[in-house]
Length: 312
Image (cartoon, rainbow, N blue to C red; front, side, top):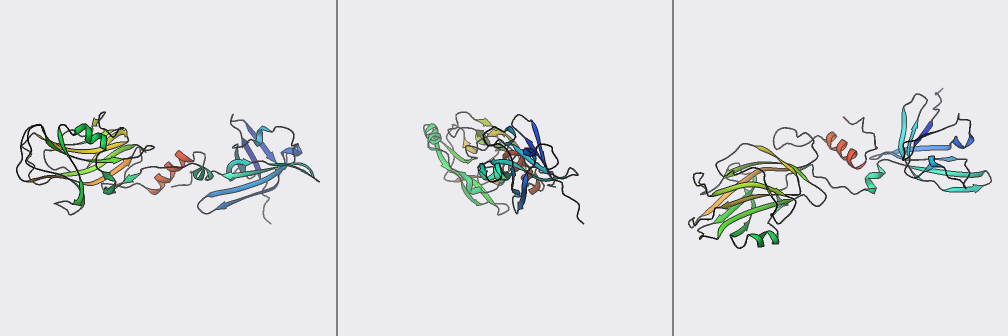
């Protein structure tokens, strides 16, 4: 013979006050009937429902919309978790009744739209500078955009920053490529490796290559994240970005005439953008993230009351 379930229901309202419903309680209005709950693949706890014999012309704080609901067994183990989604009232041959419907916490993920950058290696997301940024630079620089090509060392897809010489005084060349995390996301770090391409001499201090960040696409309020890198190749690097919407690579030659009828290039490869989620990055670089870490972070951020204790 199977042991009795002896299910009870614990309700927590917005003030953190707790209430208890169960078949063993003395007040008939606290004894739920027709108690059902189910799970659904991809959702975990899905829907639940029960009926309480309560007066319909009175307020009942324990049946407030969005109140927390936990159904548990006689041994204390949780059988279901969710929130009150509706509580229609009716009067019939059996008297007054309130039908309590409950939705599992995964319903929050359908109610709330979410966008998060965990790791983005898509070089197609790097674009040219905004019209306002180009306008701000037009009086001093000849602005060019980057392209995505195989680099000259490993034939990996790379961001190619290039300019063509020669150039006169007051019209130096500048090449940029921008990444936009979007209005609701912020960048936490960037991984990169850069290589001097053709004709960029590290002995010429007029060359500048750096990663910049800002919350504006006009570049007026910016942070130099890396400092000048135009002094030779580098190993794989992670660089922190202080929760900014935009990052961009800036490649330019100082305000002096120079160059010949040649192409001057820099390659940025092994590029990965990480959001400001703070999750540990797994080796080798540029590393990815553990699926379990992503699930826990996603649910903690957008569905905080869902119990993720079983995610390993």
